Image 1 (cartoon, helix red, strand yellow):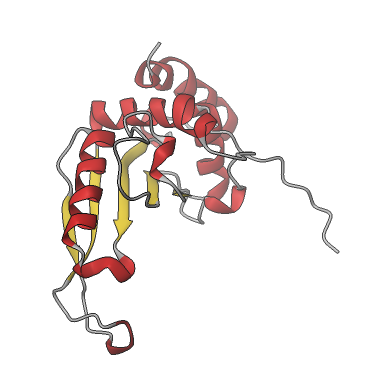
Image 2: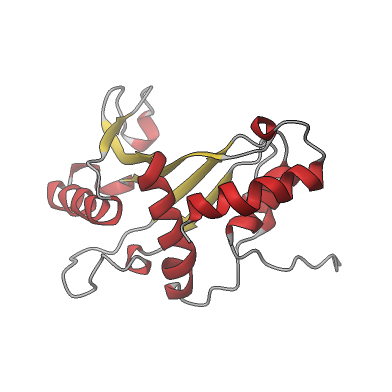
Length: 184
């Protein structure tokens, strides 16, 4: 069963019961997934940028878009309009395929992975996950890449608050840590 079928057949009825929604359209859903990589110090390194672009194309199956600086910051040597990152937005079928691969393949491949912190879900119910290495994705062969880089995955949901978002992601199978309330 694909994630989309699971959402329609299992998750919508379960969330409807849990949060007492009168209508199926009120149930939160995942709207889009954004994969983002910032270039940092290597803004001028053309080979590094090409490598990141090829990696994102392999991971998502979609051509990425370059992001530009909105304003100049002299201490970082960034000028307005300068290309500082690259991103891909996934929606629809590709989004569900990527999420399925993320949950079932990529998370188990991350070194010392013990689950996603619940703090990764913001007040609007969106999830942000940072990967230190792009090697967690099965399409990226360790032998073929010159540079290992990090990337950020943002899962945008229509949840109204953190509780709804957390429950939605748990039902999709995202592995969250068991948060301990032992603060010293």
